[in-house]
Image: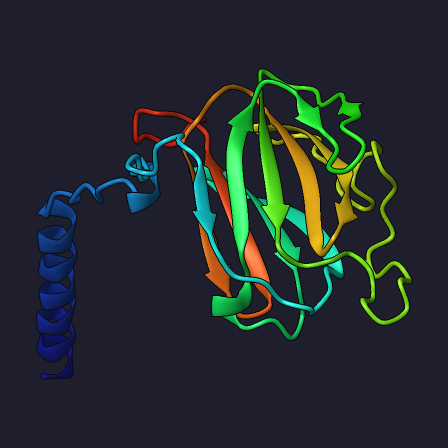
Length: 196
């Protein structure tokens, strides 16, 4: 009797194994990461501006990379979104406010970035952002960027701070006003597909 049960149990296990082996493997679709990234294209390349001003000072300028664009952030801690005025536009050459001195900026096109915030303390005149006129922005390394080529400090004059951003070509860009910072994004392409 024990022998018959063992034989039955063995037959059931063997049958289950054969059925499992006979089921075909189901192909798993490739991960969604293979899908192309869709990028915004409606920004355009015409100048953008907002009229406002703040007495809060520029403290830093930093950059970052995204699948669709390169980003520059001008940090103005304490400034409310609506108080950050700016003018961002393509220019043939960058000329320093006040002196009119030409500041060379590398790249296929130059974006002039003006922020209506001083890079100095309005009460003392002491610099709040350690940049020098005509020199690359301190702490900004553009190695490996798809769009950005150069970033220069033009100066800070009568409450405005002026920067030169060298880019690969005349590409679409947008400007975002946020509390404490101004953001400039420059697209990698006009097509709406992420550049690889």
